[in-house]
Image 1 (cartoon, rainbow, N blue to C red):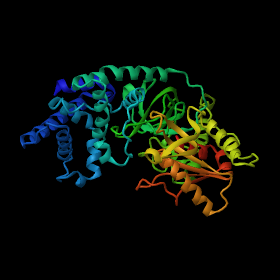
Image 2: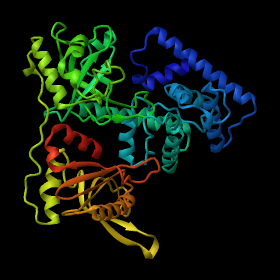
Image 3: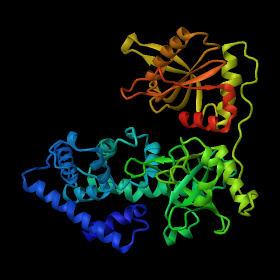
Length: 484
């Protein structure tokens, strides 16, 4: 168990960072418990001689380790999957030790950004990450991931599992980390788009760190402000950081998403904002409850948005404490967007939509494209359809592009019938693009349609933005996060 533990720690030091000696002993005990469960399944007659056998063995092991007293995965409660998710690394390292022909150790937890960089480099189609609350799918995501990574290497002549591990963990992960580390070291010059709350307890090592891994909102962008509230024992907002990279969704990370933080600005303890100050502040007392981290007593609020108004009040409280707030950046304020003359449909695109996308930091050809062509139908019966604007287009397959966001533009949607017709037309493009988000817009508004539980775009409950509303920083950030 110690050898296996040391091997995992060597190739994923981030997962084991800041563990005390007591923590490490508990992890070794956990490895032993997992090992006992594997032996019990083997003793019961379960064999692993094919890939299908390996999948079944993994599912059986998850059911046993869930301690839920049920026989099938469908009966396991989400809470059991949630409690088990953190141990996926330990489970898969042991499975690799027993069945190295069929299992690759999951050493990607806490370094999923490196995996995404590898996938982008080699154009590997990584399975879509489940939603944060779907702990069952997140626990089982390991199987989907292996079904993408292992065939890729085999198709390229690497067939031995040890060589596959060497390819990913000895070589590619190291290369990816070097590139990501260098990118984080580059100076942050831009005005932060928005601010987010970070909440946590800091170890002695973290108190003096100048940069590092931290839980963060998945919509965090490099350069964003991160306001740190130390929950215990000081109960104060005592530091401001900047995000060194965009937020990363990691299905195996308990808190789901993270970034790297740096450019720390420490606030002296006698000038930091205390919990009592937050609770007694009239602004936060009267602020609406939705998104009010103070009314939640900072419980489970790490990664919450800090609005422009919230940030202004925090600056006010710091000034009252004698802190020089000129040391802190101002948040980005969008320029006027809606005060233009619209005569043609093209004006909506060129005078409203494109300037908005530019303000969001996206450039034509790199982040968005016009008139993207999609094939509808098969064989000789296919037709070609063109989407007005697409965001985040993937051209890995030249004849089958994909896009995260499809945008259908009209000059004016004058009634519900036209709104419905434009939604229907936009849906056809969005489905061809395998898009996650559909936007229909005209000279008056943008209507953002997300997918419902059935996987269909929700026509009845769009998120609507008037162009003039986007001059408000919080509305601007809300839309940007939906389209990111």
